Image (cartoon, rainbow, N blue to C red; front, side, top):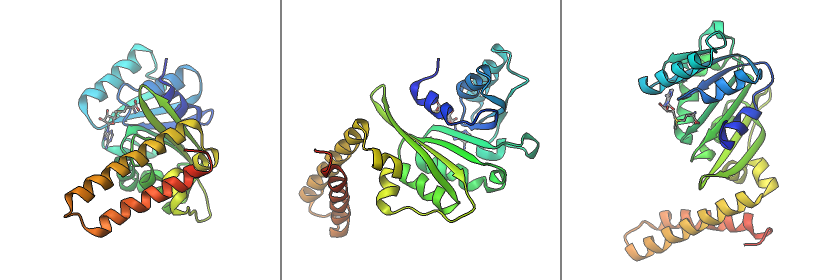
Length: 231
Ligand code: SAM
């Protein structure tokens, strides 16, 4: 049984896909997709030996060695041309690390049609990377589980340029259009944190004015987004 978070990532893997799950740890996601006949092949990439061995163990235990391969490698280096990977999933890491993995792996991205990404934090930096590399968001989800809020970003490679406004990049174009209760809670909380940061900066007195202004601007943007749905 997958967590709701990983199950949601899995929902956006196309039927019959050839998947690389990077930072797979126990390979729960590719194993589950393989068991449910949702994919035709998967690579479970891990850079750390312990999690790599967890993945190997899980794949052997479930008799999935013909369908899922565990590989010890850094980021997209786990992908080989013969794998013909068309979908990459990266879940449970910070946005900057996901961005770095994608950035380092441009050679392996050539045949990739879909990315399903679940950054724990720093979603905006991931959206920035997607737009700059012609990956267009086709769906987004936000969900709360075990006291955390998670965003799932689904993007397809397109021929035309992709661009998002600063507000869309920060909040997510689909999440912004939907403004679900979980979304509102997340941004109410972010606003509170920013307000606390402002009062601390004001007390400290030595904080540069532009720093303070940047946080104040963020608060104003959040308030603008939350305004029409009630605070
Ligand atoms: N994807 C699973 C999930 O969402 O439940 C596991 C997430 S776990 C918190 C993050 C995993 O990413 C760790 O096992 C870590 O070793 C792996 N990782 C971190 N950087 C990596 C990289 N550059 N290449 C491959 N794996 C990486």
